[in-house]
Image (cartoon, rainbow, N blue to C red):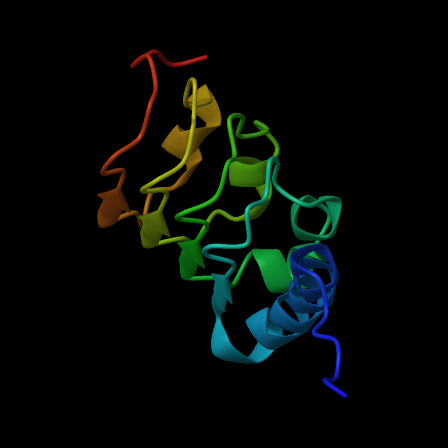
Length: 116
């Protein structure tokens, strides 16, 4: 008898809290390839004390089509932002808050280049 493997949804649900907890220590938030359609609320509402210290933010290879403006109001210290392989339709103007941003990766993104 084979053991059943957890579904992709269950794996995603388990991965998000684990990664948000690691962000406090690693100063990076890594959520690539989870088939997310939106930025999880747990990420957007991450405590300011933690969010303000995140340096690397990876959401590549997801189905995300929208970046909430408050994301870049909270994660102001990001220096590497990986959004390749997403469906981002626009970039919020709050991206200008990322004064430490050194690398923005957006390969293979289906989007209309406009700033909100």
